[in-house]
Image (cartoon, helix red, strand yellow):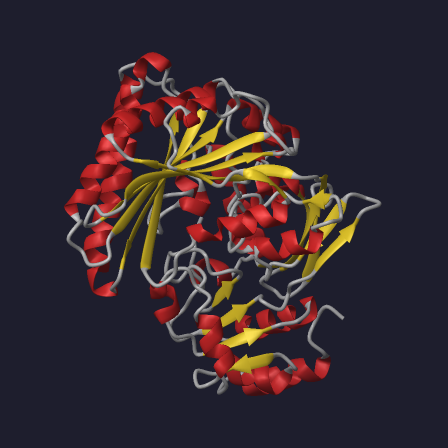
Length: 494
């Protein structure tokens, strides 16, 4: 069945006046309901990347183990008036997106299937997985899915936010490889959403976050996978090295050497300046990159190089060193066109602005700041369109870079100061992009925000094309006319 039984509906009607969601779910279903005193509750709260999200205390944590149990929970929440949250991996550091204080939290941790259909080249994945679990399950099968670059990241949030992958220059956004969403709608019915049967809802889910219900599973296109070459290179940050690496990022993005190659260059600076360096994830979808593929980066002379031939599983698990827990995290983003080689000073200006923002909060205890430069070559935009498109709908006329800034610190006491610095960072990025565009230094083009890296008060939906803003608003009204997911749960809202 895909609905509560008649008995359960009657019981719900009798209880909902006086019982909250936690009590109703315990009384009406077999779903595990964990309260604050339980070990299960404590362990689940430790699974957030940012300690501030784990510090929020849901009234209970619900652990559905099937689509039907998830639908039963949604039916009960619908008829209560409580705010709630849904959690996949808990990697979003934006409080109240996958965390909540006082209302029920739906953990999808036990919706963790990874079922490969090798004959059809498809894999069904539950939202409760982390990408390392998917890599574990597919290891040795000769197949892979387009997903997270760090194993610890959750499946659900990444796919609903678009998702950048080391395979994106070959396959597009991770969302472009979703073939079907098994979706529990706000009215608790279950629908299998494909491009053919619900085309508008299907498009809205490709970058529309949690505005249309709860996804119980994703059917993904699978791709052949053999050994890869990858790891990280580490460089000291000096004025000379910064110039070499920024030029290398620019040239790599424009003259993309091979669609099988991918990088994530990140500059890291701690408050005390004890760590001042670059770390660059390197990836090649084959046992060995052709000579010269990453030559512009190796010219900067890394002091440590972990790149080698390995399995994809080993690679994404090794990348978990990039997820350091125990701090309060904030992330923000901006999208910019790639400057020409003659205008490398644009990237230098961006980099200097980041350093200035970091310096303004360097005395905050535990302060660490990162800036990542994520290449989006025009070929990736073309592939995304070929695979059915998405809400970001980037044109393939220019190359782009997605900037990601991270600020972390030890105590939530300092959060107001750090949030102000974050706003200074991303508004400064946008002001610079706008000014350089007005001066003709940068080309004018569509520049949506990348949801997975966005700060909670950035206007993700406002940066979509007008026709896509209209589409998601219409679809949301159709599937959620009472505003259950609009008004009662966090996240980027339409």
